[in-house]
Image (cartoon, rainbow over all chains, first blue to last red; front, side, top):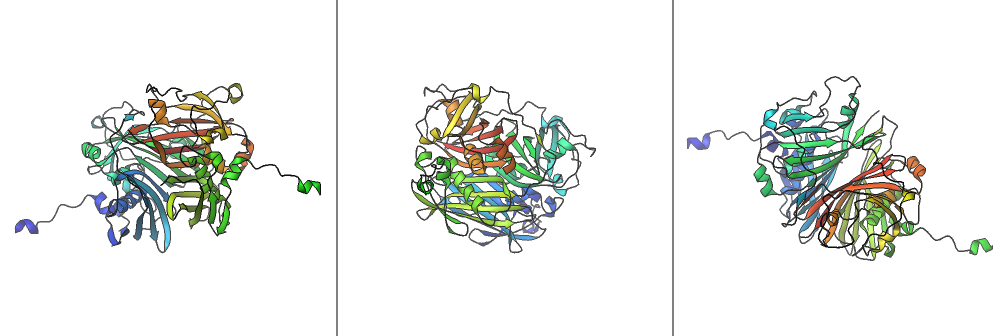
Length: 277
Length: 277
């Protein structure tokens, strides 16, 4: 009996953050998480994870995520919101999803996703993982930014770090490499992968070391993995690499990859980011 | 009077293909174009152009496209279809769009897009255009594929061509570079750019030189340009580069860029492609 009255282990902050309450088929109530707060509103990665979580919980889901695109139409205010995730088309082995987050009667985010039943085929990682020192040989570093959400990740920079002085100097290129995982460590799943795809810092800041307002407007994540492979990765570090290809008149892109330590390329992702000045 | 009875110049096949008939605000009737036929149904790039065209014609559109994601939920059958394009959220300088194509009562495609009013800011092309021979020094080549739509493009390969024999030999990497433009030449606009983003041949075929069923399931296009810059490009060639990063269990990605001859990077784009075996 005493076992039943023992307090349960506290949930991982990531699991608490993405928890949703079902309202109707495909409709869920969610809430922003102070643990993943950004400068204004929540970290974009946690919102991506929440929206993907709505799909993962849907009783009609077919297969596992292969592609996910999220559009940040408005800054979420701290507080409650509603998610609706519905299949738009279900085929034999693929399913197409449309997702919306509404807050205060307005659309704040839209997303589309594809889930699929995968079969074993010829496979090859063409973009090989760069050779870098192991995560265990590097120290965790707190990036020089004040947002709460960065505390939820163990980030070990390898190359291309943010400047610690905002002196406008900048770097010749925006390439970064870093080891990263949830903090505390947590077994990887599709939702946490979607969030990890958004952990890279603002490429513009690497180039300019100048503070200007910025915000991701859209992110696309391609999942080159499956549950069995994710179970093998467990709570190990991933190697992330990100680079900006073009910065022009208020918008720049970021192209990124996430590899497991065994060289499997789990995610390729791109995003477009607004900036002022 | 004789002038009035003279036959007008025939429309460019691209303009005929993307023509839509308004049915209601944001609702249009469209039709597949035999000129852009693929093996089965239409070329995916022309469908992307048609869906973006619905946004471009919408009376409430704010600004110009900065991002566009299309999901190929089902193969379009040759014939008529309906497009609905509606703004999901309109902000001060950005607007988020949701688009659907329906055929025979079912959703065949979904898309999201962001249009925006851009302002001049600090800008830099970080991914520089590779140094390659000028398009004028190279010959137009017809790729060794039977689809009609390839005749609508003037393609001048620079590196990484499809094998002319399906002998399973394949290449060590899937990097291609090619000059490309509409055929006949046509002044560039956002719709034709969206189609050009899908002109690259199947990365898997470069790697394997083996015929297997394939099909793009989703494509994201980031536009780093504006009408004024497109007017400067006019009907000149663009340099395209594409590479696959990972091929795994039925899906591979393609990351690509389109540069103007002056080195401006007009488009960065990624897509996920299904393959069998």
